[in-house]
Length: 192
Length: 294
Ligand SMILES: Cc1cc2nc3c(=O)[nH]c(=O)nc-3n(C[C@H](O)[C@H](O)[C@H](O)COP(=O)(O)OP(=O)(O)OC[C@H]3O[C@@H](n4cnc5c(N)ncnc54)[C@H](O)[C@@H]3O)c2cc1C
Ligand code: FES
Image (cartoon, rainbow over all chains, first blue to last red; front, side, top):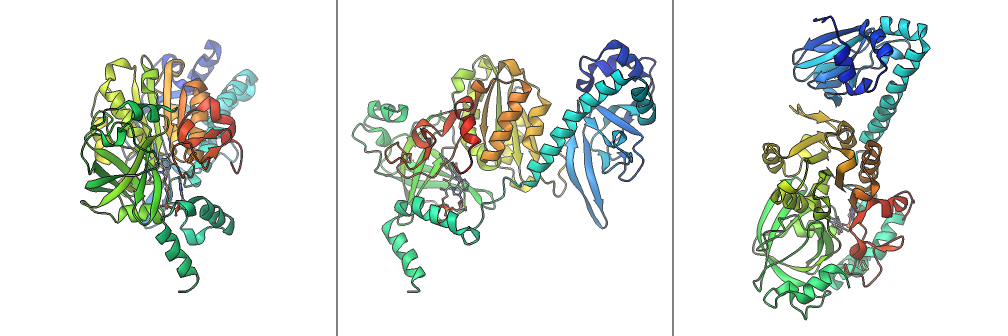
């Protein structure tokens, strides 16, 4: 782990802390470290104490769930300019997923205990950090919901369609079909 | 009179689809030259007019494709607007007519009516960053606009293609996306909802790619095409990023019959999708997107 004397410019440069007040930034520096992960290395594991969170400066991190005997399921990927890990902020402070470096990853890490202590002691810092985290959590939740919708799945086969949809479809497309196709359909229905 | 119809009436007589006396309700026979399977349920056909001649269209427009004896469906044109010698359509087989289309082979004939509808206003994005946001087979109607943007590359700021697919196996035009990604003047980002196999790329919805930015929101035009829910969320993500809703364009699909503004079948609120769309300016239809059952 590299810990340069002054991480302030790195904190300021990261989109997560865009426009951060210099006083707050100096408080953050004391809890920060500069880290590097080779591809394949884990930033954290599911179930572990969430002792850090990471601001990704370069590279890609896969957030995934391990499943015995099968390849892990990648839930999402996090890229440069984004944040990995929010469990440090929510009790019981345990990571809910694995985080694996897909490529070489450079990140600023923040010590959770150190930061929580400072946030409690200085509500302005506490509010500022939460104000930045909440929209990210909201965005991730909405993205996860969208992902679950399976939007690009093939449309339901006609036989699975509701009666209402079937009726609407017939109304809209029936007139469009060539007469012989409609005739065939009707004959099929009559069992002919 | 709508633009395609006006163009049709003033086009040279040699062009069979644009002959002045052509009735927009009468299909013109085309022969299938080539068929390429893109995905397990999606294929691209190259068509030429049986009577010879060329086919002109604007990116984003569609044709009514008629499988003789089966029926007719609206399908966007997915080829290069600069190449008038061949008409290209990419279709996903989902039901009776599209499956019948899928069963056709090179040498077979089908009927074509069109081109119909509004187009992606590529020229309105000159001087801007241009962000294409596509989901699933929605990349097909955007591809002509991407070709046009590449042909005029120096007239834009950054040109970015953001594409979301279901799985790595469902990525449309994979080789072409790879080629585009190899260009220094085009950014291509692909994401999948579910990673499979050795996929080492992005996982997550396409709106995540919008949130990552890489464009100047105050100077950006965006064309969005995909399932309606995806377009709604993509437009919201662009708006949240600071892109003016008057500079976001979406392509809306509704069941169609005549395809040329005669029957009212494709009505969506006050609009006829076939004539006023399928490409709409988002701020003009944002409210309609929120109305259920419309
Ligand atoms: C302007 C326009 C451009 C289009 N461009 C393309 C294109 O480039 N490529 C392409 O593959 N498709 C495109 N479509 C959609 C295509 O027209 C439909 O998939 C087709 O009409 C389905 O007809 P079918 O007889 O094969 O299936 P049907 O038997 O009518 O339907 C089968 C199933 O597909 C569903 N379905 C029907 N239409 C759509 C739709 N528009 N979107 C999602 N699900 C649908 C039905 O609800 C049903 O569950 C476009 C539609 C419009 C209006
Ligand atoms: S399909 Fe007839 S008016 Fe649009």
